[in-house]
Length: 108
Image (cartoon, rainbow, N blue to C red; front, side):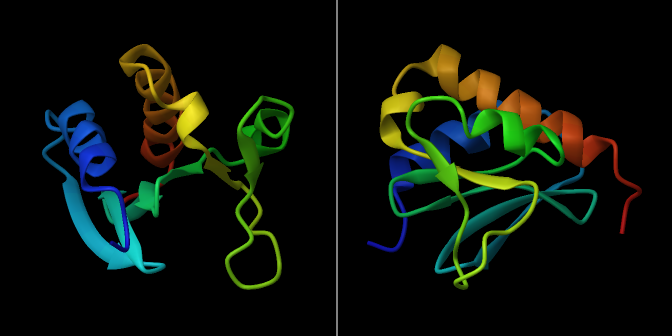
């Protein structure tokens, strides 16, 4: 399993009201795009959260680590482990932060 289908479905439901939502296979998982911009994704059992500058502050939270897919951490992205996305409320908070950042970018 390249990514947790259950977590992907939960994210999909949170973003379902967005007419500009598309999905793309990436990083060996799945990415959720808003207006052509990466919003968030699922890789393995973790949420790939694109938070922009807020990503640095998020690293202080439990179950969060840098998104280091290529050997160099990607600025503005973090990986959020299952311990921080188990509850619907926590997942909603993470996805809302990703949605806010992606929505601030011009459409591609």
